[in-house]
Image (cartoon, rainbow, N blue to C red; front, side):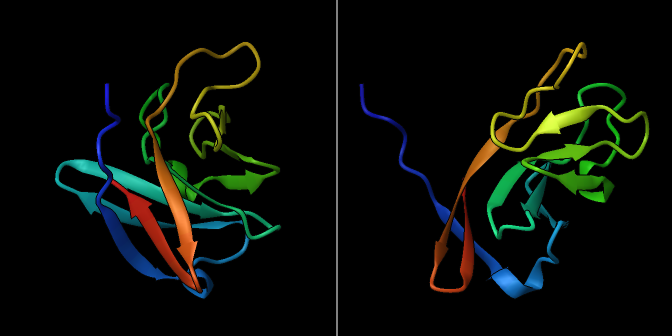
Length: 106
């Protein structure tokens, strides 16, 4: 079976996303948070915590995780999975840099 072809959406430059911060975007009904780590790694996940749907884009970025601002659930930016004893996951999206332009695969 062939993997689905991604459509790449340019969302701005790397400098548009603060280090250890996020940028939000909408794709249809889906809220997406694009994160930049201190090491300039870029990740994109659904902007809704699996616990109580808190806005992950407003959370604290650390290592390759984000901590939800509502109830401190820690979500892996790589896998979208809740860490520790918490259970649940959010959708992840492919990302890539083209020069300084950040692209999200939809």
